[in-house]
Length: 461
Ligand code: ATP
Ligand code: MG
Image 1 (spheres, rainbow, N blue to C red):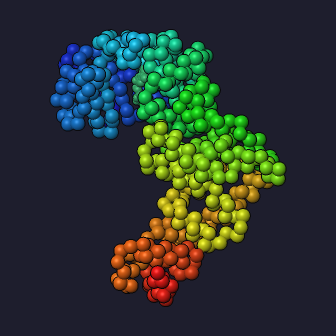
Image 2: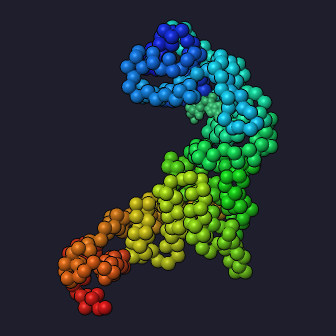
Image 3: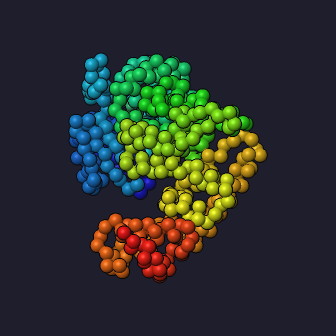
């Protein structure tokens, strides 16, 4: 079923109700940018709930979700996520953040939208050519790459301050410029972001983080003053010099570079967050040392602690938080391996600690090489390749990544006639250490032998 056929069916359903219907917002915008999306928003000039009944019948829909209070409903049809909303106007009063909405015509509906590029509507009458309705010169802004509010920007951002984050999201995603008045209004009204729920802010922030070059968004968030409001800890990294002699970037700019490097390799929001937060402990641990210049001893541990607080406040899941903390705590380990000789046992220990996150940890480490000095970059990259190769060798042989004790507690208890208790744990730990040290292979028989051989020491009270 192609999209034209779907539009045709939807159009006929609306016709039966005597309603006008248009496609609006993101889908129209993206189509004009030669991008095809699967999310389509429709405006119904009429009663969306009655239209829902008609559409359900005509398209034999089963999964239709209604929000009568908001005059909207959504459904999935083939590959598409379709969302329908009553044409409405919104008015905001000073005392409440909830707008009063009224049924309205298409034009009033379009003027309540956030940016001119999002006010475009498209007719879907079958047979006629797709007509774009463009009352705010959205197409021109789209061509020029401009983010601009259709009405007074101050009012627009007062009404819904999340739109300030959305402006930056669209500017980042499309590499557009925020028009001057719109930009000024963001700077001026940044504090209004405080009235927006953290969930909505984080949702928008994630979308910025998922852009091709997240650094563009973070710089805009910083320059407008929005970043200071929901992530002041990251603003603190500005002006914090790095220790390298030839490294002129501060921690803020270094981090942005790491983030963009990671964005080229992965779409995972968690890995991107790890890139964003991996040096967050640096401002707090910065010391000047006569011999070494600026140092940041322990910043990975201080950072880990800070991340727990920050990400919880930002309402990230416990899984995300644990992951970002783990990568941050370990981010210096792989490269530290080269300082000494890269021994098998050091590599085994690293794989053991990182577990399933070992690949992501290595991706982060690779992205972390940002020096401008070509000699250093070359040296670091060589070191990195060396460590990576070693990890692959050791993992292939010893399978530490998904470490399961080769002798389990039950077997130990049976062997020595032990009750459950700390002794069993101690013996397991002994085996684990022996494997990581390379004293014994990661195999059941060999480990069992080892335990038997050390019976006397192990059972000593
Ligand atoms: P995306 O590609 O991320 O879905 P989108 O433009 O479709 O981008 P949505 O959040 O899906 O963004 O919203 C759909 C449309 O609804 C927007 O294009 C815009 O016209 C309007 N809209 C959404 N949120 C707001 C808001 N906070 N204020 C004003 N208009 C909004
Ligand atoms: Mg959308």
